[in-house]
Amino acid sequence: MTLYFTKEHEWLRVDGDSAVVGITRHAADELGELVFVEVHQTGTVASAGDAVAVVESVKAASDIYAPVDGEILEGNAALSDDPARVSSDPEGEGWILKLRISNPEQLSALMDADAYAAFIG
Amino acid sequence: MSTDSLLHTPLYNLHVDAGGKMVPFAGYAMPLQYADGIMAEHRHTRQHAGLFDVSHMGQVRLRARSGDVDTAALALERLVPADILALKNGRQRYTQFTTQTGGMFDDLMVTRLDDELLLVVNAACKEADIARLTAELTECVTEPLSDRSLLALQGPEAELVLAALVPDVKDMVFMDVRAFDVDGAPCIISRSGYTGEDGFEISVPSSDVERVARKLLEHPSVKLIGLGARDSLRLEGGLCLYGVDIDETTTLVEASLEWSVQKSRRAGGKREGGFPGADIILRQLEQGVGRRRVGLSPEGRAPVRHGTKLYADEALTQQVGHIASGAFGPTVGAPVAMGYVDSAYTALKTSLFAELRGRAVPVTVAALPFVPAGFKR
Image (cartoon, rainbow over all chains, first blue to last red; front, side):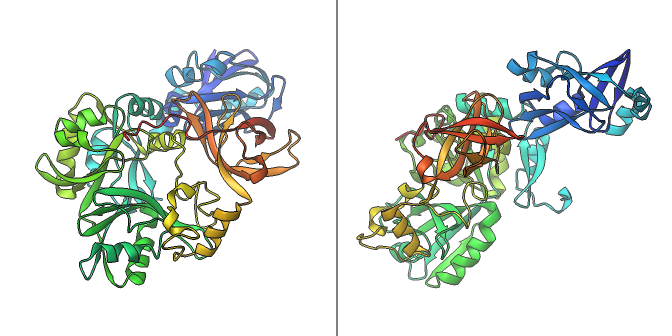
């Protein structure tokens, strides 16, 4: 399993051709406690950069983007009742969705943990 | 906007020390939230007491050159539709600066205190308000109180907290205003606020405000609360935010604020009209309007936000309004909103549909406020 990060403050844990996607602790702290999470329909085929989910805090809505090309396999069902899980454990139980990666070469353009730490300064 | 160019209130350092996340608001660097976050700050205010820095708002003293406060009251009535002359000493009232076309330049609180009127206006509008007052009310002196700061202490435990420093505030009721010393600082305290809770607004000399704020924060019931929670609190309280719910294009009747126009200023009253846009406002008060501000409860958990279109039908073909303010209501535990809808759709429980990310979300017309007001009457 390899962990990647994006400039949109998402993480991506890759296992074979599938990946779990969530937002980073930095992003979760910036957004504040979430009140609503909605993942686009399972089976949706997205290109890197397409919105695949929306997360809402009291204050604002933010899109979650596909870090790489892929198909949505599932959303984290536990978040519909407890969206605040993203805020309390963004890089664990607060994962947002699973993707089937269709273009693994795109992963090389993403950051590793050290590069992301440097990116957020 | 670079935060370097922003103005600071006298409590800027206190906000930063307390972990405030500073954001630009009406030209000021203001705390959006502190470490606990908007949800926790909102709930704390509803359950205990929250301290807000609202020093960015404009405080203005209006005095007649003759010294006669009734002259100042009558003068101000040329700009606002409320009855200011009948306002009793030590009482406060909500009103609006109206435009010639019946819209609103700003909304404000007016207090009569001894020989002067004290106005609290919105930060983003204060320069224009002061210029208008100065130009129009030549029989008065308009004096911006730029050496005073403003604190709001809000919540069911606000009285307990403030009474520990000023016991006599227990005798005040909603919209009462009195002068008191707080920890040695000469303050003007009103029993009011903008959260839907009981509470106080405290006008403090800026040289004393940090000391007074820290004194209030010593009480275990009190936490600093940022603008984020201030917004969700006022929305649950059904209160309008100028620039979002009301502006120059909305009339007070459309905004369902007609309760703020007393009989004396309405058709047939002792001082009928006489404010900008009076012909339009008085006609709307008699004959009604084409659209009204209402409360709206979206189904599900997704907040429906400012600008979202409202439709009569699920197919989203017949637009009948739009959302003005919308957010998740932490106390309600569900999304809450206010918006303007065509008058045929304003009855409570009317079913409408909001267009949210291409889908139709059912929305029901709901009573305001969403959370019962805690005012001490």
